Image 1: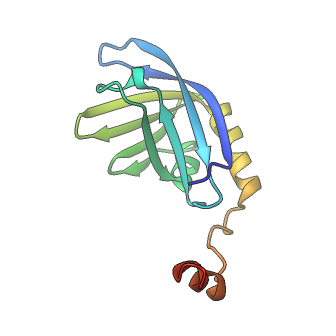
Image 2: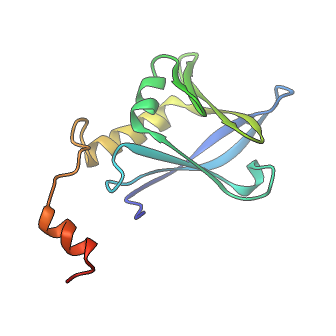
Length: 137
């Protein structure tokens, strides 16, 4: 997937003992996958020492900035006046990560400048799609 928007930011990993650890993360968005956003965490934040990328709905991020939202593996909710918490569930466990609202809101505004709400559905170009499917024949 070609990345068309990338925004580095800081987050805080909340450990089970209540301590917070600063993390550099990268928020990504591509017009090629306009319904989704990505958050990539550095290798030092994972149990296996590998970089981790979570992909989830852009609308979930939008909803979670103002009220608890999500189900399944990703949950998002406001925390106080200036922070948002994201909860990520995997087979290995649970991670709580806190973000400053302004960074997330700035990122969302940039995504909506690229692909406005309601404009996510791709236009149908049968000739181009058939050419790509048939290998340029």
